[in-house]
Image (cartoon, rainbow, N blue to C red; front, top):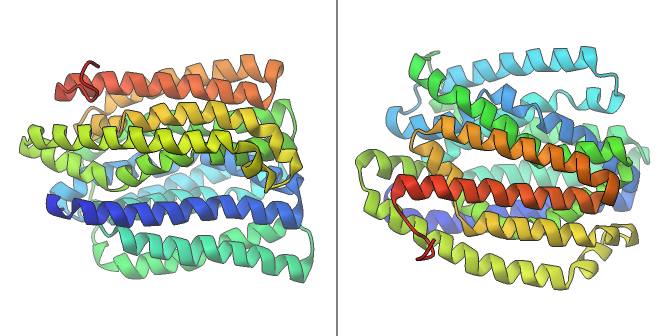
Length: 400
């Protein structure tokens, strides 16, 4: 991508991610109002288990394509989807055999759906077709899912299966559009040692990242109850809004990092990283302050029971502020070829997160889970910033 188009793509990413975030908040709101917090908690619990396995299904190839498409074009796309499908099938069968939870069993095919969507997303990101991806995802996936949830409620009443049907139908429609738009990117099956060696550490790194993002909800579901999962998940979504700005940047920045680094243009890479991190710090600080001040009003829109998540908003919000302030550190680590460093960092962070959740949840419930998340996110991002500081020889804030 030409660097001069960066601002335009950043705007497209901003609009798409904001719309995506709003719909992610609207979905649990609609489900709660129509079906109740208990069914939302049931869905969220199952979804968290599914999310824990996506790293295996994608085999690290989604992030790997961000690295290889700018260098070698569409060469490894077909093989990525084939390997993803086979890995997903194996994981689904294993979980179906050993997991007796009927909710989780119904949601197992989502492992392939979500991991394949991540690979499609990598193609769109590498080609910088950001607007096109979000148009498909928002209209044919997220909006359609919410409409179907409402429609099935009116047709069939309160039933968990309504949400499952709406989810799968929305995936089918969106995948049809993804394939039609990207059909020219498919070709012969091709794979080599370099792709595998680059992607394998990303599997572990992705696994650890997914654990960090989902282990708290799974542990809350097992140690408390499904309604607590619903309250925590909604409060966590509200708290992560400041990080939407970082997500906007991460949507388009990785291929640029790879391009600049391999071309040896480190001065431009340093400039773009410092500028983006400083802007993210200022904007995120303002947003999280507003969210914390009005946290009870925001949570109250979902129902009075959700106000119990007010301290979740505070602790997770602080963690996400640090996450935004250091910028795209882990993507810089990955796109400069240091996938093993990313793997080790994520293993450390996920281990800390699991241990702290085990310690804090019995003492403080969902507030304890949020505190564990805050500590983990701060540790992970400070470590990532230290590594990037060594790679680029850069100090974002002058003295550190």
